[in-house]
Length: 313
Image (cartoon, rainbow, N blue to C red; front, side, top):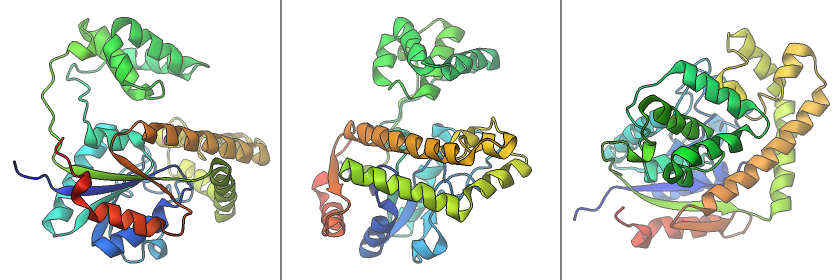
């Protein structure tokens, strides 16, 4: 059996130091970085997404940054298609792709693709379900609705995967057949993934989150939000639902108190970091590395250089 091309991945919660360590890995192993962040894909959203600067990239090629217009929706399926194309191009150049980011949905779509059916769509059904999800406790309610009609799919999807939960409910409403019983083309995984995840003591991570938010505000995050609105990005756009942006919308649009918004960003980001850690702990075949250990970079390089992780999937 032919071995699949090797792709590396460095994941972890926000503010855990992925950018700096990924540069070290890339330089040591001849990698080009493929960003795996659901917000860094958007053009003009730089400060609030902690998008790496040219100086931080240190000459290492980066891909999948600024590939989407913030006025438009962008799906997991779109990311998968574009990222796999980019990774194929990197491999053709004789280099190794290194996925870097904290969006667990993207990693899972690449390693374990789950087609979302070809049943078409219905804007009315989608709007109705999205309204349910926007209510307090709405995500849990949507997941419970799915569990009633399609327990198999509900068991595979976390409560917070609202987009897929809604899609599975939409498929059921349109066809009368649970998504888990829909005929779907078999999807292959073209690459073998070696995944390492960063972690650190929880309070230290939260302190880093708080400092990062303060730095973003100093760098002009509120002005970035205002610029996006002036450029025609709707407050209801998918991109504006990201952390740091949704909390500042009331400030930019209504003059709401800035200090309260900043505290909400910090709290929301800490909660998000916790959810990211929980998500990645559910992933199989992952090396966990304390990002603050002195030998963190050396451990990552040793792991990525060792073919023991490579398995046919």
